[in-house]
Length: 336
Ligand code: SAH
Image (cartoon, rainbow, N blue to C red):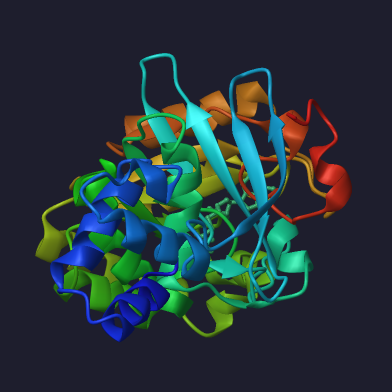
């Protein structure tokens, strides 16, 4: 729902201020039509139905993987593509992965989104709409800003969406904002907005390799990024989740685990999440399971907590780094 349009439409009609809140409460709880909003006068419901579409995005395609992961491809009113993913876990967790931009202006070499054309920042309503799409079907309890785009480049809209996500059932502490290490954004999140979690895409333990993989490292080098993350961790009294993609022969050697452990320290400011590489057209190969386990042990022996991320939704290109809004990407079991 376009919340600005809702507010304008209600104001034009001279409706009391609480109407917007009433409508939003219905929408946030998963209402699929204005008809359901029984505490609104019938005439108003009809007018809103004509003036304010319930969804700010058009759903173009959906795909469902065997592990229960679902991916939705949307278009904005000006025809920009974006994707969102729902992950269902066995323990009942329902986590939604949201996009903050259509495409991404950064050019990380291993990521499919970086290879598509950058469109624009999404509005707060367009961000919320992705979560609402899934919320209309089932309860959700976690949100990660790990879809398309760099959230820190669109932080006003991301924070505005985070303010409203609790209405959908997702408290701030169950929201994670992931960044390439955009320092001004990390600094803002340390002092401003709801207490969301921070995730850092690190991927290399030294500057030369990181710059090769992630050109943004030229602008914000490793040491400065980690210092900003430490300040965030102290201010928010929470660990930073470090995402470390496992690329065969590139960043998965023993010495690199040792260097990573030295960089992060064992004071608990950082927790590492090792990410198996999901195939894209970039030509990297993922590390073997044995290499990932060895890397993890080397970190653990040095007091750095590490877990291995479960790859989900791979066969529908819904996994990390695979979101590229390609038409052919959703061929598997497209739902009706
Ligand atoms: N721009 C932000 C938000 C996107 S998060 C960021 O980079 O943090 C997407 C996560 O998936 C990032 O950690 C990214 O590095 C990772 N990723 C990108 N391509 C991947 C791939 N092919 N396989 C696995 N993870 C990938």
